[in-house]
Image (cartoon, rainbow over the protein chains, first blue to last red):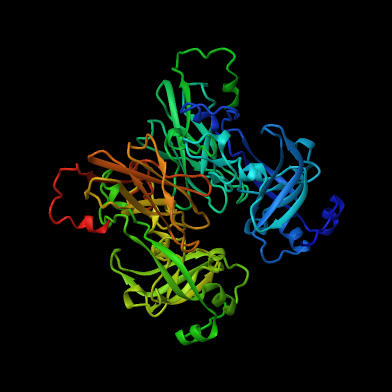
Amino acid sequence: VGRTLQLSLADLLEGFQQTTVIATMQCAGNRRASLLSVRDIPGEDPWGGGATGTGKWTGVRLADVLAAAGVGDGAHHVAFSAHDVSRLPRPAQPYGSSIPIQKAMAGEVLLAWAMNDADLTAVHGAPVRVVVPGYIGARSVKWIDRITVQTEPSDNYFQATAYRILPPDVDPAKACPGDGISLSSVALNCEILRPVHGEQIHPGPVRISGYAFAGDDRSIERVDISTDAGQTWHQAELDEQASPWAWRLWHTTVNLNPGRVNVRARAWDSTGATQPQSPEHVWNPKGYANNSWASRAFDQLDHDAPIAKGDAGLKCR
Amino acid sequence: VGRTLQLSLADLLEGFQQTTVIATMQCAGNRRASLLSVRDIPGEDPWGGGATGTGKWTGVRLADVLAAAGVGDGAHHVAFSAHDVSRLPRPAQPYGSSIPIQKAMAGEVLLAWAMNDADLTAVHGAPVRVVVPGYIGARSVKWIDRITVQTEPSDNYFQATAYRILPPDVDPAKACPGDGISLSSVALNCEILRPVHGEQIHPGPVRISGYAFAGDDRSIERVDISTDAGQTWHQAELDEQASPWAWRLWHTTVNLNPGRVNVRARAWDSTGATQPQSPEHVWNPKGYANNSWASRAFDQLDHDAPIAKGDAGLKCR
């Protein structure tokens, strides 16, 4: 059934228009760590807000390659398979995923061979990987070896069973293919990056900064900062955005009284939606898509208090 | 600058393919009432969860009409003006709005002359209105008289100044064009419709039902119900969806102890995002896009307790 188009890396380089997209890649488990205060999540890494990054990706549009292969009726999903077997599940599972055809045909999805103007390294997916801007990182398959246009989503373990939000009372070890909410677009989120957690801050105004990201088809419109547990908020300044597919960096400067400070941040998107307050309200058995308010504690020192020795965080301000 | 295409209703009927879309129309102020418990919102109607509805709309695709008119470079927004002047603002303002060109060219946006298989009545926008599925109702302009393809969003009062989420400390009377978050897609939301608030329920299992809506480009994936203030949740059943642009109705049946019951509901969308807990966390000066958890109080009667007379709500179960 259907036809197959075989392409070498040279074919991609010579036969298609090269394009570049600046895009944020974000793990579905980004910020999982703060869910652990609600309930344990065995077997998953306790990522903080650093399981994400923004890069400049160079390659060809997946849409152009699909057009060359011919996409007919019944093309609802585009599945990726790879030279990649994960030993994390029992039994071990080949890695793969799929995305809806509408997303696959949008110009921002790439088959990429370079990141930040350098050829991909092996760990980043050389020779060629998928980059799906706005979607959870799990859909951006590395070491790709086959692309299949099909009627149904991929039945690969990492599409059908993993990377899904299960109800709180479900045991993920007993989850079946199709259970839970299959993740695609990243949910509205933000994180505080500076000050570092537990940092000791010199007396004077404190610069607070971080990122916010609204995923696919939505944009960050506002970021609020609170130093009184969310009773009052003020708006941070949004930095210029590198591309529609990149996170939005933000910063603000606040004056604080000496002592322990707990700063919270929340973002608003172009639908007027904002983030839930508490990790308790978004906890799920695999710890995905934690987009509760960002929270960061640090110490504002008094004018005559000594700075603790060896505080590397201070150098970062 | 540019050309003008003039079309009569007969031209629309005869010159373009007729199409039908089942779509939910939702006011940006839907569920505003529960924000009033946080702080007053003078001058705005205290809508409950009924400032929304789902209809079958018949007309022609705006995309087809724009194609016939020719859409060139610099076409970033499509603005609508109407035989409509609102006396609510001081001074009175002509009504209008705009949507991004990508949305205008999507097949679901209609110039409609019929609702639920009957010609539009005057109050619904006859002879022709815009229907923008997934967007706040304010963008679905009635009594349309002109469509303009332009570089910038509409400078009409209702696009540039009203229908925006302002920060909590801003006086809306002093808001300037461009202030705040301009609303487009409806934010993820849900409401409990049955039982009615304050209803007295016969002993036995109680059926709870309502709607959930995820707006543009996202879908409802789960609805949770809690009878213990959000400590534990169980999943409601999702009814079949009438169209990708329609709300998702849901229902569940619960067994309750006699007495006052407070049921809460929250929806999850296809990004794994869910709703904020409290109206306090989404309050804004014009009271838009309240998508905090739905909440409904009613009385579960004891087996030997009399039903209060004249309780119309009971007939609706």
